[in-house]
Image (tube, rainbow, N blue to C red):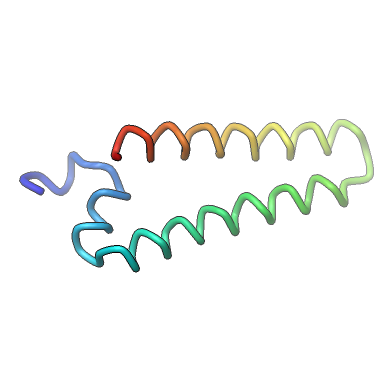
Length: 71
């Protein structure tokens, strides 16, 4: 990549570490999403469930759009 500081994280890691680096990053993203959803399921109040679910949905949409742009 010509300019590392202006590109996306996925593209830089995929160039530096190949397929393994991209898959590790994807696994870390999925782990964060699953932990957020697990916290939402264990929340005591409806408001806390909705906040955690909204955070997980927002994070997922940002990641999906970012990865779609890179690909």
